[in-house]
Length: 176
Image (cartoon, rainbow, N blue to C red):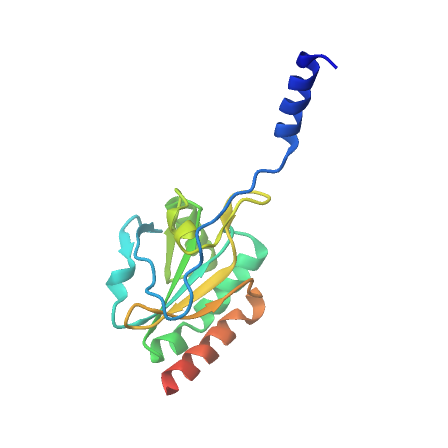
């Protein structure tokens, strides 16, 4: 075989070989929640530290206007009064931009904050960034205690059941 042929074969193999993208390690319960500041649907900056002293339900989701994400958001909105009774706020994060979040909130009647992680930094800090089949935040939730530490992590959640699961965990944690 000629060197040219071998170079072409190696180049082709390199193009066809899947690239392994390594996300940051996910913070575990007991660890401090990574700090961040992102723009919300109204364009204002929202920082995690703004909610110190409250429970924070920080949920990551793939994309505005998709069926699972819409269902999950509706259930959080439906249960918002229960979260408020538990001194908790809901914050959603995806890689969509603030304008997409604004349209999503208007169309779906959402009153909690949706944050635009357009540069993927926060999704990466929380170990939720996925590149298959497109770059997005995976469906994971972090329940953050009033002291700023991760209290519970929910992986690969089912949108229809998730809000009820988070409320149950919140009630259990507050009994301790």
